[in-house]
Image (cartoon, rainbow over all chains, first blue to last red; front, side, top):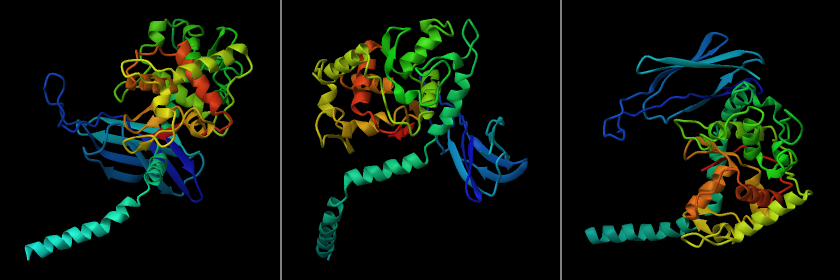
Length: 97
Length: 267
């Protein structure tokens, strides 16, 4: 995660490592690779939720998510977590620089 | 009725054609390149590379932080912009990737097999080499490219690289200059830079390693040369060999002086 402070806003860019399988691909033996994708994304600034979003299986593998926050200060803690369709959650944190 | 309609459609098409002909491919490509650069995640890979640089591993359980990239042990600032260069401890010219391999096998005492097991990564299996190189290169942003040119071996590498660049061989009798030796050549829509000229190569050497949109990974210059040889149907070159380093030396010296603007973003 990289969060950079601008004039009254913060630009955030996060890489989410995920297979993002569409459920349409087959493996070498011809078996369908099951659907496996990120469903929900939540961004928190100092513990307070600022973004809640839904993601579909149309998004590429290892997606990069970037967004602009109003405000933010140097040293503020950011956390981005995601939940996939198998119920697994993962997260990444960073600090505004 | 149908006839007049079709006639009208044909007229409309004919009227639209000159407009299409005016589309400047170079400009449109530049505009597209600017767009992908704005959304580039290259920086995020630098963070991963930094963690690997500091990660203790190998039989000695040490990190690469003591690795001498030419500016003293552990100095990463502006190190990439001053490569390739001659290293007395290895008695040869090395580029960044070759030097990293050297540090992995000496400083960290890792076996060559271990250090080279994943030189080229993919989206499933990222490559340590690629992530490390993008981190080190990022520490040279804004620094003019100044590879070593004084030592006799540095000059020899330049001359070997120049020879290789123009040397035609392989199943298709190709050389680097077959594609990169003349202006206005292109593959499909992409214009190919003339790499034997400073104007053509300056921007190239100042943007590798790069994030490649087509495989969602960061890639090294060694990979780029390896891929060119694959496309030319030559035998596979050895990573970090005298030949691939010599080509990097030739290109970097030809393009020297350009402030490093990478890690870049490419198709």
